[in-house]
Amino acid sequence: MSSAAWLQRHTLTVLSRERRNVAVTLLFGFSVFMALMLGWVEAEKSGTIHTAAAHFLAQSGVSTTWGRHIPSSSTVLLHHLKTSIVVLGAIAAILIGHRSLESDRAAGLLPLIGLRVFDSLTYAVAKVSVLGFILLGYIVFTGVISVSLLVLLPIAPLTPFDLARMAAFLMLGWFYMMVFGCISIAATATAGRASTGIIIPIALWGMWTFLLPAITGSTMPETLLDPHSGEYVAKPTPLFQWSRSLLGPLSFADAFSHLSSELLGDQYSGLPPKGNVPPIIVCIFVAALSFSAALRGCIRMDPLAISVGK
Image (tube, rainbow, N blue to C red):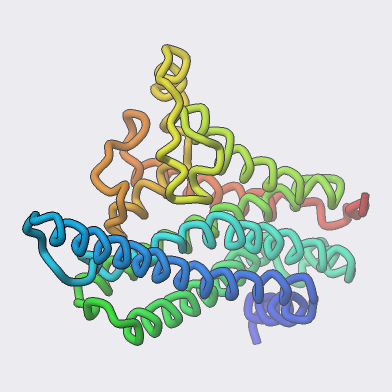
């Protein structure tokens, strides 16, 4: 067995035994199921309102179209998955990235790098690949549950185009979680304290998720958490217009939300993106930067340094 395969197997074994990782994985799975059911409940509510309105208009002598209100595409029901990925998916990625390094420090594995049992590049690639493998499992689980529910629910049947858009959205979600996982690995590798290694990615997550969308879009801070909160938009001012043009390209979460809406076809699809940089360019740039930071942090990490717990 090669040193990279041994490191990957060791990391997977250690992470699977930690209760905190199992707990956040179960929470993510539960949030995926609830997000899908919430999308279906919203569609049913819209159908009830449509039926009641059609009945009232018919009694008033106004011609209308009868029938249940069904979304034009089944993928519209998946728009609440953005919340699961943005919140629990990103938090899970941060925790996994942090614990993958801290568990090695606690076990005294890092000095093996100094003894040339395996080189630092092999160690870095193993940690990033394990992170990607675990998060890919999250995405596969999400995809299986999504397809199963969309097939069972009484809605328009899935078309190959719907499946392609769903797959593209799920891969986008995988990249989104990988960004925060790689940031967590980079912060943990370079920080002198374990608490600092987890605080830095959490702070960046909060800034991207809540602060920048509010500043650049003059919207409520929970815009990404509640897809309908974007309706509450503050009155545009020169300050918001200035921050939109200057900080809009830095809003990674906004770029993810925009691309997700375009792929799922929800009520915000077709709206112009924030900033002058295309959202896909923003996502690719941030992903490449975080991946490079994770590799660089692991390669330049001092194998003899002992992280302080608090």
